[in-house]
Image (cartoon, rainbow, N blue to C red):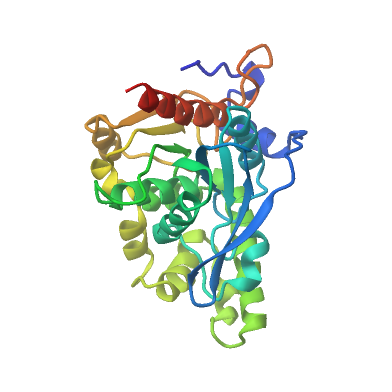
Length: 327
């Protein structure tokens, strides 16, 4: 696997993260086909798909907190996978992006059942010969949790998993996000989360305690008052423990790639999780010195392209697919 070569001026987690977010990508994907996939009554997932004309494996992509199918890393990864001859499906987490009006409930970082439903739907499509999943940040936690919860002989078969900057240790990452140096990241997440809840309240007045939103000054506080009690958890601690993929990393039985930057501003991978990944031969954990959060900007001189992580996701899944065909 090609090494990341971070430009000298981006060898700082904040610089890499912000630059990746603001940098224009100039991506022109072919028009996407839109499908609404029901998960439960009044909850539908919006999946935007791009199809090859012949039978091929398919890659399901899942975005991060307050993101959508239109996030830059989703589009870049889709481009890389399409170029390798794959079908690609960009999933909006329940209630995110344009799916919000058709989802009556809130999302959280533990809704791996939604990923399972999307995989089931994707595997049933014509010309889909296999399915792999890739996730970013919260989406990375979701796909890892889904992989760890699957029975070894579960159907449909899962080809591979790739996770970029996954928040697989939710409690540690929530605490890191609340550090003063991460004030602007947390403020942005909070503003978006609160705005989404107010829109839910406008559609269904009185269901959520929107009057308390002004007192919530951290994502952990929001999760303690809103996310946890309204999505089946006692409190934030219970939510972070039960929803973290770290609990099931040892149970992953398919080829898995996990990319993490040691200078990620707010994602923490605990030593316990590192030990678990090291002990699981199915997981390839790569921790780069630089890369920020879901950024991993590569030098322009590299033949691998500027967006190192997105290329690695498509490359890894394709390599697993080709190895399987030869065996």
